Image (cartoon, rainbow, N blue to C red; front, side, top):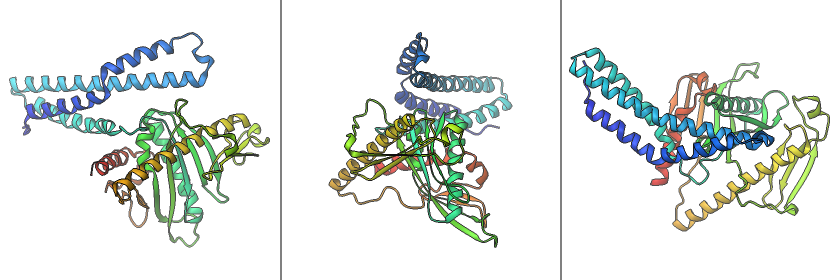
Length: 369
């Protein structure tokens, strides 16, 4: 027999959906879909493949977002009808089904509600993610590769296009570093909470004595630059080096000096790109990532100045923000949010939405304190 207050529960669901709609703005989404649909049907759209992909990706995302909100509205209406019929017919099975559906809607709305917390200046941007091996030798390099795979699998689960831009392979196994883009709206807002130091504890597969090893990897997440951003870099501030690509690749990648290393002299920021086929393509990709990093540096400097003026000395991110323990027990735990999972394999296979959602809520709570 159902034991919940159905009118109150349904009212709560509608209230949550209303708050989500106030942010997502269905009317604005419909107008955006109409505009993008017109652009997508224009003759010659695919003459510029990069722009065409952006238009079609933005259209698909807007349609999905509008459809998601509309589906929730229909589900709430349907469950309300089910409750009314169950009560009229005195049908316990229908009321039990309605109770389960309400619980499911509540959980899914909570996940969708996280999107309303992504209101930062660059949260809606696509993301550039760099994973670097830290302390721990070959285990750290292997861990860096595990993290890159985790994020690429997360993107794959959501249907987000991702592109590896640069990889620096370690000598024995794994990666020294890797940079990749996640080309989906709000990729930066979501993945930005993954930035920080990650720690792995396990029996090292590279230690012939089978000893436990602790290793570290750093994750950097920056918003992808857009043409409308005012980040101009004078040519005399850039040093450009070209070299031959290394690691797996086709003949055109590995036999010409197509790789590019770009250094911003005033800040010492370095970007390497080698996964495109030509030096021109790698240079353009490196410049885009360099602009993104300098944009983030400027944002961080502005935020630091504001905190200094406000007298706020509280650190926002600490070392070892998440631990992945594979021995003597299985546990992934975020040390900021206390979010944890005992299914470590699922996490490394990209099941990190709960960690991302908890991180977004944690960050918003910290901003409001």
